[in-house]
Length: 185
Image (cartoon, rainbow, N blue to C red; front, side, top):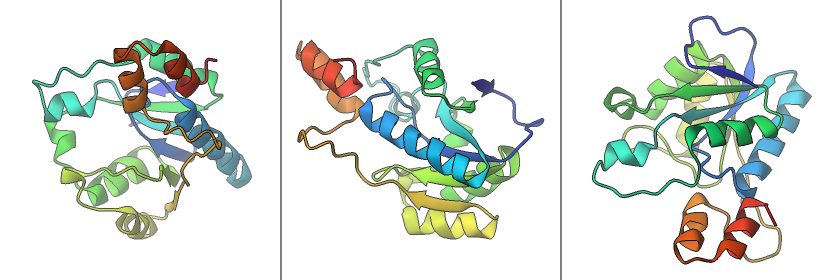
């Protein structure tokens, strides 16, 4: 997996999904597997767009958020999924101020050459997270990017796969549940 920290010499066209991917849990794994399939079907490179620092720590600096993985552990887990590339951004106050349209058109489309964006079923981004999936589709069309939404991952277990659920399980000392959510059973 190629890790891009600078975006001025990107070659190729990409399918991407966006997220922090803390823990790279089973929900993330499901999303990335679908991304890889869709990228292959369209002749695109598969990638994720993630952040070196958790956005919540910029939005709420006093938050005592405990992360599941270090940055290097996250990158290693992402690489193990078979992705072609990872776009690694620093979440800064300037990035925080970007609207969804600016992020899609200026960052994803123009800088990173993303042609297919797969959005997790509950993912929102952009200044104040005020825009939603239909907005993302419209902004993508304006710059030649297809935007599709991934359904919720449901394996029939009744579990909700999220980084927050993994953190709660770990804080409660339920390592068996955390491992199940992470796919490390």
